[in-house]
Each structure stands twice: as structure tokens, then as C-alpha cells.
Length: 243
Image (tube, rainbow, N blue to C red; front, side, top):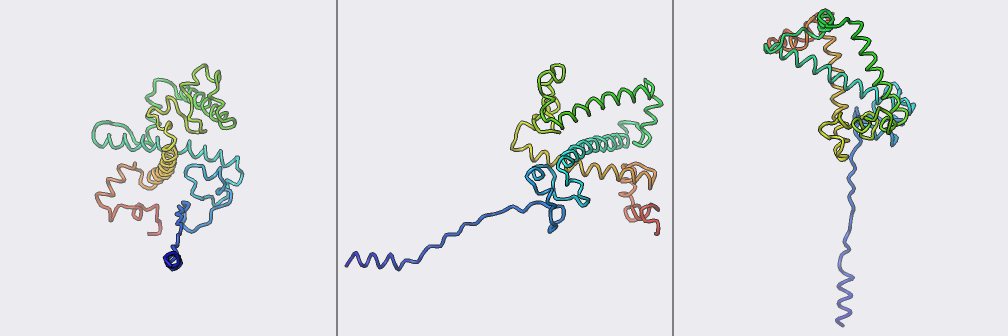
């Protein structure tokens, strides 16, 4: 009797429902709801820092070209970030009375007129040095890791050794050792490309400001903050010529 009652109790016990909840992180997109092009949805493309599925002209359909565009954007981003810092910091220090330097659009002529060497000599040296670096970068692009092989650079390969990822150098070019932590490297790459894209847009804005107002970014910002309702993009006579 006791055994029958025990079996009855087990049979009457309600079944326990078990559900597994899987959380999926939505892929970041430049425009929520937009469809990602197929050539940007491959494993190789998804591994690229800053891939938000934006390619309206379809320039990246060629996988090899896409790799090169990534490297080109990376170099332009770094150049733009350096340029923006080189424009804003001297401008701020000049405003503060610490320095006395010309605006970025006059700096080249001032440097040429006051240089210790002829402009042609400086240009030749710059072209040689930049050309050498670009050739090495191109060789590493075509054959990743080749520029870190023993004997590829006068025995200095160890000091100039890269992170192992094309376009992301290590050694003396990474004094803080940021590329050594693989768990954080992807985050640093994303931050770099985001800031680089902002810098490229900022540099384009500086050039547009010069064309519209004839002044530098610090002067334009100061004038805007002093009278924001009357000094802005609608009042410079160029941005909205019909006003």
C-alpha cells in the first residue's frame, strides 16, 4: 500500500519545465535595420576593426582590394589624428600666449621661408624616407610577417617587430605595450579607427572653415562661443549662400 501511494505521489507531481535562454548580441550596423552587404559579412571582413557594414559603392567586393582599403584607411586615420593634434594644440597654446605660431594653412610657407635647408632638399629627404617606409609596408601587406624575418632590415627586426597583425606595429612603436594583451587589442583597434574617422572628418571641416571664414578652428570656435546665435554655419555666407 505504501509503495502504491508513493508511486501515486510521484505521478501526480507536476512536470518541471526547463527553458534555455540564449542571448545574442546584435551585430553593430552603421544604420540600424540596414542590410549588411554580403562581402562585409564574411569571417575575414567581420574580423576587421570598425566594420559596420557601410559600403554603398561596393568598393570592397574584391577581397584583396578590401584588405588594402583597410590598410589605407588605417594610415589615413593615423595621419589625420596627427594633423588634427598638430593644428589644435599649437593653436590653443598660441591663444594662451605660450607659443607664437601661424595657422596651419600658413605654416608651410613660414617653414619654407625660415628653413635651414632648401625646400627641394627637404622634399627629397621626405620622399625618400616615406617611400622606404611605404615599400616596407607594402611588402608586409603582400607577405604578412616578412618584414620581421631575420635579415630583412639590417638586423633591427627585433626592435621593429610587429604585433603579428598587418598594419599594427609593435616593438618601439608600442612603448606602452598595448598590443601585448590580446584580450584588449581588439578594443584598442576599434577605438583607433573610430577616432581616426572622426579626425578625417574634422580635418575636412578645418579646410571647409578656412574656405568659408578665412580663419582657423580655434578662432572660429571662440567667435561662435562668444555669439552662437549670430556666428555659426548659417551666417558665414558660404555654407548656405541663399540666406
